[in-house]
Image (cartoon, rainbow, N blue to C red; front, side, top):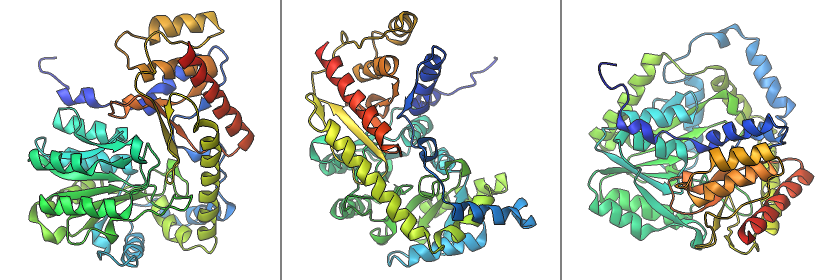
Length: 434
């Protein structure tokens, strides 16, 4: 072409969570059974959406109005309903005009970073959720800026590091929180959140809180929404139904603006996001219409409580299997439905292998998949996939210097769950001993 088409930031757009699927699909052609531990899709892991919830959608489909456009910001009655839900929590108060719907939070994340000027940076947690870190890095044409979540301290953030990075990098305009956290399953303690709000207030930043898992907590934990602790600091909360109902195929998420009247620059960002959605006309309407009916249904609260309890039980099963494996740092999870397991320093090297029975698969892995400059945890993941059929994600792909892997807590079939993670345990021990 006569001019470059792609900016330098395009190289930061990576999503290993789905990228590993291409490798798994290659193996399926050789007859390999795949255990999908790469992505948080409850439906894929045998979750059954209750009939009462399906009937809500069916009834909405009978209404002719369902098939038309809605307001560019989203269905007004739904936004009003959600604003009241937030207001009842007793923190910052919002109106329907402070809510903007998107085609899933991926759309919201992309839009947010797109309209922040490239020299302004959002610092986020590491290990990072790839959608956030890739979009932020791409907008800045640079590596993501992160603060460390410490596996030796329950995955809680290193607040001293966060403070110093904010203090000495004037380009940082915002702090990202993912609460409950993906990929670690950590739930931020209240005092940690309050300190992050203090840092934002001291340095005149706005906060972003990805709360897609806010109502998925277990084992005694509770997530504290940003609206309840933000005070007068500007902020954006990101929410959705893809994990909670669960309805990932709905592609329905929304953001809530907090204290947009406190800062003209922040208010301009909010208005720009609103304008960007107006250009698109609106987001998908059907799931928006369903939200008040689902959340207000008499069976919803017990459904969510029972589902959370099951996730907590599965987390205990995984804990029992993996917590004592030599060479691993393991933390129990309390929110979302992931666990990140870290290899201890020095236990991985580039000579380790797992036995791969199929000779063509072995050749493909060792001649095509494995490279000399590959992170050692990614190398393990490729051997794990080829040898055992377990499709997990390396932690080095989550903008982290740590070596490890992320798995899910979603498998509804308890016997299959036990077998998968026992096989994973055996694979780790075999690999480290090779």
